[in-house]
Image 1 (cartoon, each protein chain N blue to C red):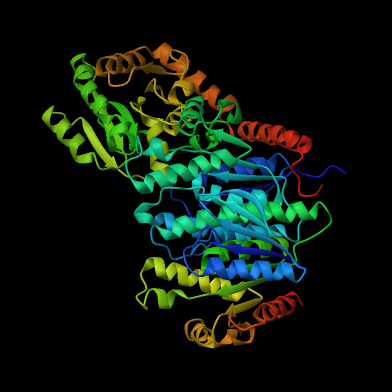
Image 2 (cartoon, rainbow over the protein chains, first blue to last red; image 1 turned 135 degrees about the vertical axis):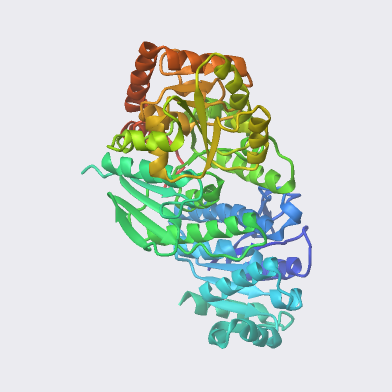
Length: 208
Length: 402
């Protein structure tokens, strides 16, 4: 299977736990014989690198100044740069008669490129939520949080499968975004011994 | 079989949604391109009462859901463009795709960047204006952000179109890009809109007395439009025993300042601030006015000058920006330096008093509209830009399939 991973962080860029989560996932996938292309936003380091089999593409945010340090304009413009890099990867394989089988996006920050790529190339995508905006803003939705919530909602609707790290977050997603999605949400605790195999089973189901 | 060239126009506004000048520009340009036989599609924001899909004079108009929560106008504008990009993708799947993606300004150019890479088709962007030009400089983070986005779009576009050579120089300087990648295609005017029957006396008497000559100013009342220069020229004109009345069409933050200057000069009876007026009345005003004056200090193009020329109204402008290219001094109008009331008064006196010269200038100006600024001509030039880009694209290695 050829998988395109989209992440906001990947070592050496560490903002939270997602960097190590995505790094473990990518290397475990490669160890199981899958091909992994990983696109990550990194303002300090750019370009292609083969990290023990994982093809890492680091891109920089194209727009440096944002009014009131707006996360929204930063994320939409930066994720567009990730999207163009992903397009280039897809065409790289296309020209060899190959294709990307699945896109796996992490968090709302990389949701837009996954949605757009799905519409353009009809590639199924899986979305992992490590947290949701309602918790981060403690239910005090200002216009920024509202926008992020909308993006998360779009991602849940448009994705083929959703992964959460805990059963609790799965229930919370139902509470915030409606019960209709229960079917496609799968809670996979990433400390279980064979959690990557469970992720692969989600991939397989998403591709059907 | 020769395939018709397929073009996708991206615009955040399109009639009936009219916010600035881009709506009418895209409306006229897309229809003119369709008349030339191109397969033209427009992707634009939805609007209450407007259809999701409709054909307008051969143009396929698609409207997408433009609602999106955002932290600011910028946040909305970027999320709106993601919706634009997704809807365009859906439009493209199920067709053979587009040969050219043509975006207008930064409010659709970001979606253009995405689509360009998704489909590996050339992106052409018309820069109608720049954030730097609109605010004469970059003064805060919001503007800096828009300025950067504009630079990104200019960088990603295969070619950039500007409406004047002046704007080409400005865009080139502003974004450190080569002038060789910028094509100039002017704005247009539909002269047929200015030929109609109406009650000349009635309109004239509504705005001025029989003995008064009508001077017409049309524009937002902001400093760069230079109305102060024109008001300063009025006493000189009156002292040369030419009885005139100045009609000011438009609103703006400087209105009170200009009203005070006029009152201080004792010109209360000589300057009439008409505010916003409807399209039809404005066109009749162009027809009855003795001179239209554009005293701007900064002007990317100068559409008012075109409208006066199309209406056979004599024209006096400054030598700034796009006006310099529209008006040929002594041929299709008169030009004076900016901020110079004496020169402005002299030009107005000359063009009003010398009837032979006036008739000569007005006829030339009208012909220039027909030759240079009609939408079929503009569509032809735009098509020329498309052909040149497609020619380069065909020879390039950047393609969807190897």
